[in-house]
Length: 304
Image (tube, rainbow, N blue to C red; front, side):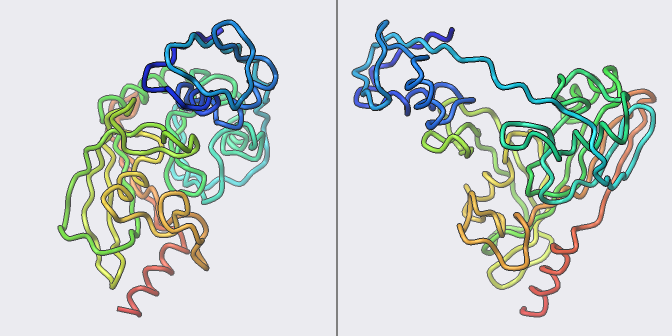
């Protein structure tokens, strides 16, 4: 049972909206279903989803157990960039979800890793995320590392926290950046109105830092390299949109219309550097841009 108290600033706010804002894992539609099913009480009474708060109410939420999702091995091709007894690094294609979740019960990177690695994946991430140390978005391509044992997983997770594990991306953004390089230091949290999106916000936002530099300029577009200092959900996409230069093809944080000939957003994880969890030696890996990304750059050069 989750117990919440509506603040004075919640006067006039619908109950389903309040719950979506207070519980990051619950969308507004899911909150409405919980209310309709009788899993939510306000001051001890059942109410409707359209109930408007006055401020000061005691709200209890009984979250039902989630439907079980099993991660099973599936023979999905993997582009393996590096592999040994402790870690595996793959070049993830656009469109591949990293781990099973509601709406994506299978056909994920985890399903592919289970088939490729057998029982040799860490259990730190739980049954649905074996081996998963970090994630990249479904429509972002590039390097992602997984751990084959718990010791490797704990080492790599610590490196994420102290920035020893470094990730570099390339992107094409809309517009022309005025400077040749810069840093976006702005906290990121769940969007207050759309729970599927993230946003720069001081309200519950976590520290997020992205360093960028210009690689090539085109009329109306810029090819950039981005280095993550932190790893928040959608971080590069949110930060670049925040400074007025959304990722080309990003229909969530940029133009709503998809770009013809481009699957997903033009964002690719090109580089990964970490200390090997067993030997302590530095490992630095790179992978080429996706063919669609390269084709877009060639098109922009011809138009320049």
